Image (cartoon, rainbow over all chains, first blue to last red; front, side, top):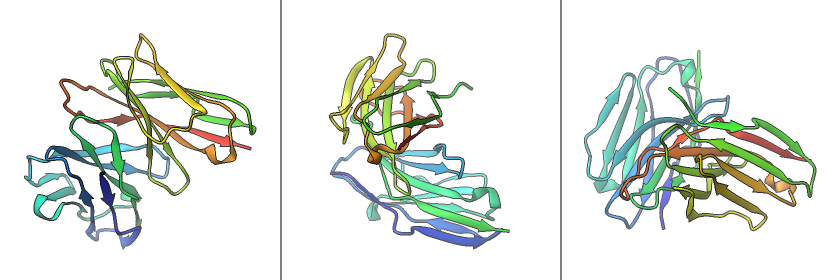
Length: 114
Length: 115
């Protein structure tokens, strides 16, 4: 069975601070995909990034960066110089290569105060 | 770019009534997924369709049924509604080819309230 754990339920920071969201996953599959989605207060789920199990290269996209470490089964997400618009719930998710359904973590609520 | 369309966006029903939620995937996407998100919870997978055939099934109650039509749109039918069915229902779509997993893009969701 697959499982995704986001140990931090809520993080509160002041604008311009960096914030790192932890994600730990469990799977018996050798091939799998990891995702991060953002859910702002308006409710929609916005895709941020996808990583497959063979690609451990870290990625940076603007103020967002991701650290994938297969050895520790972690896929952490950092927001640099946070802004109020970053306030949202962030979900880490896992999918089997063949099955496709997403298994979500419990989500981390990020509150960025001005 | 075109996104996943869901209708209606909001729906209020009484207990024991029925509801139909519709989903129009991104053009050329061949796989549709349905998820249910209760208040303060993460989305839970219900069911998926690939090329109009059910491809996977999750924790979907027997009172719910779904199908994908020839134009790839999908409908989630919910009968004998219960208070606990109140949730945000998401549809997502992706391109699935040769067993590979492509990214699921989500619609804005349908907020169902059962009174």
